Image (tube, rainbow, N blue to C red; front, side):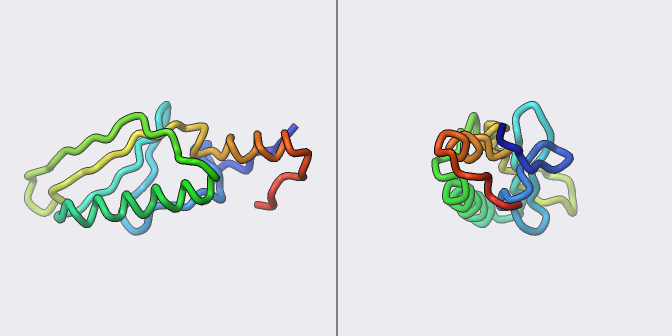
Length: 109
């Protein structure tokens, strides 16, 4: 049986993380949030993160939905871009399945 190296949220420890104030949120789907006053900047960071995850995972992650909201509260970032991802992808299940099927030992954490 292949061991998954997961953090407290059930996300693979080796998963590339969004930087700064961006974060991976809780279950059952994994909302990955990118917030900014500048929508193109939030979209660029989201695209960069998706490319990093695709490279790490070895396949495109399953994106369930993309949601864009805004907050007009003074002092808050205006745009909230959230990408809902398959939680198994963010836990690294496709990597573990490929390693199991290939007979190779699991990757070190």
